[in-house]
Length: 242
Picture 1 (tube, rainbow, N blue to C red):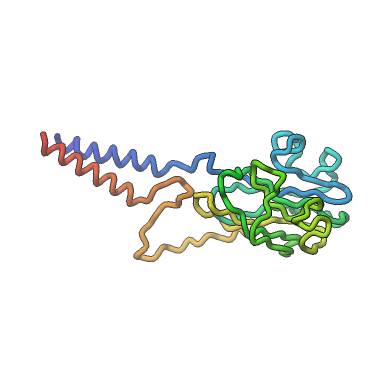
Picture 2 (cartoon, one colour):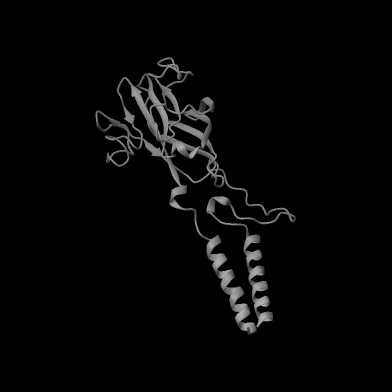
């Protein structure tokens, strides 16, 4: 075998491995979370994303507060989040004055993470007007949703959540309500910090081998080097046998 052919084998192998390690995480590894609310006594609401009448794919105004089956006359912006792996996330409703309402009938996170995936949600924080009112060390997953994980903080019809008395005291928001939560067991890399803090861009220590985050579906760079070395050995053996 000529040297050019040997190097051709090595180069081809390197290109194949390089293409593999740059493949992004598949769509099936990305999930979503939405804040769900319902107030009392006016029944201003945003239902779960998969609700048959007012869900994401069934209702044109899913991204707005609604009342009586139509967009409510209350401004407010929902911020949803993509869940790409283990980490801490936050969903919110900002710019909405709900201070005229007496209480939340429902306050929850609606996700499309399948229960059968086996992931865990913990450290669920209820944050109203910028102040943390309560933290669930372990998420209370809605027993009424049997397909997806929906951590609940308030449900006035649920005994485990204290019904109308609830588990914690709060004043209805005049500007914002947020729920922060931590997801683990997704089998992927960590998410960006929920508070959008800048990521640490400092260089790794000199004795730290560079690796690629599992959240991208990539393999460590060392794996590519090993594969190239193996290809070189195969080429040399092939040459000797000729």
